Length: 124
Image 1 (cartoon, rainbow, N blue to C red):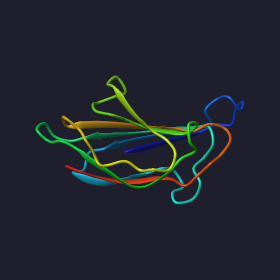
Image 2 (image 1 turned 135 degrees about the vertical axis):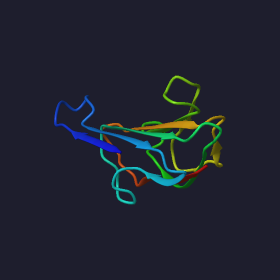
Image 3 (image 1 turned 90 degrees about the vertical axis):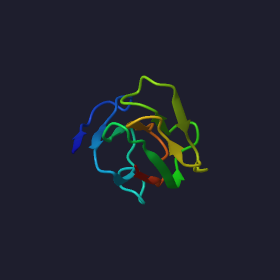
Image 4 (image 1 turned 135 degrees about the horizontal axis):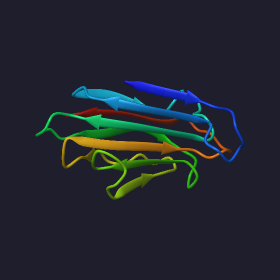
């Protein structure tokens, strides 16, 4: 499932939102417009939910965000209540492994510089 809401408001307010719920055993996650530049003032989330007993491996194969201003945050769990792993800049990380059946990912951007974003695959 995917949800997209685009609104035009003041510069300091999020103007682009998206939310994705992923339940397949494998899939692709990428920033909006990838490999072209992602939008300004954006908040997007991806929730990977697999059956009990499964874990999630997230492999980021392309990563380029504005350093210290645009972030990709990974949470080991259903939502953003667990300890975050915050990624920014252009060095993509080693694969990320969940401890359970859920992985929650958020991307947030500011109003200035846009880059190509990220491309990742996940598997059970």
